[in-house]
Amino acid sequence: MLSRENSIILTFVVVAVAAAVFIETQFSGLADWIPLAVLLGGGVVVPVLVNSYLDGRKTM
Image (cartoon, rainbow, N blue to C red):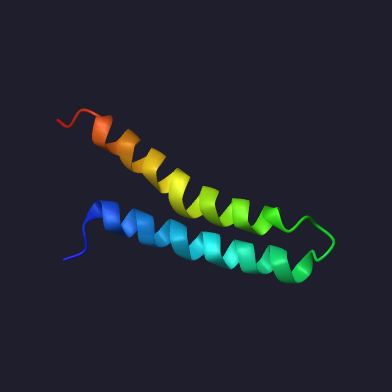
């Protein structure tokens, strides 16, 4: 069974990879670090923050 944390991470990683590839292919004039920043930010940092927020909420 897929846990909530893993499903959030998987979703954000898939979206981040798609966004990074889209940026890399469509906007070739941008700096090389921008797709990497999108990939790391959207695939690593954001899911950690979302999971931390959801873990910190009080359950009823």
